Image (cartoon, rainbow, N blue to C red; front, side, top):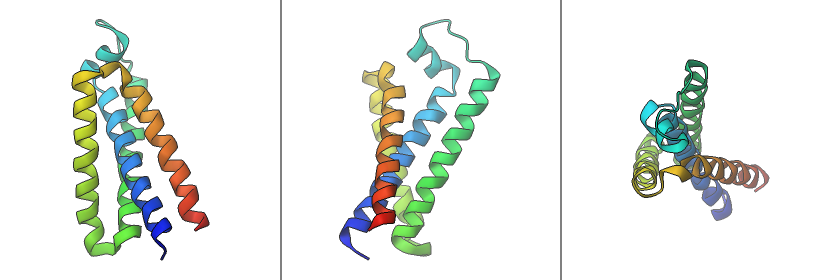
Length: 121
């Protein structure tokens, strides 16, 4: 496999992990309120959609890491991706909570473009 292919898969793994964590965070009342203002109500339907989107993002990240490193090392690579994504999200929630939704959409876009690059290379 080429270095471009490996780099694209790593970007898919990181982007999907960040997007998944952003969706899971926004599925919580506290972080939803940080984004939409105090007293904003997160509906059960939207909460379910965000939780499902977060789960899909984390599973996509796992799949990319296993495709990148194989069954044994892929899980370890995924743990590293989750750690990096978690740190990014914690810093974002601490210093610029209103940007979490934009971060999630941006990470999704990066992951999708990198997936296209991985499929082409």
